[in-house]
Amino acid sequence: MHTDEYEISIGREIAFCQRMVRRLQDALARRERQCGMTTEAFLHALEQGGLSEQHHSQGWKQEYQELQHWQKVLTEYEEALESLKRH
Image (tube, rainbow, N blue to C red; front, side, top):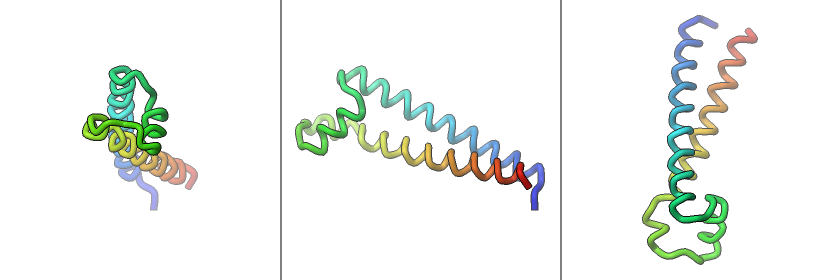
């Protein structure tokens, strides 16, 4: 059953997810500027064991994983909203 309340609720969730994605993207961009490497380069170096403990303690990988999570949730909400609009 489709109601405006569903669209409003999903719209709120989408807005929240978008804020989380922007916040995490900004945090990752700050880390990239501070450390002089991209997140991709950081993750590669982490896999290869070429980073000091300082990089681990910063939570860079955790922020990247959180970003991936929120992008996935955002996509799911956007798809749900589109599905509601089609019916």
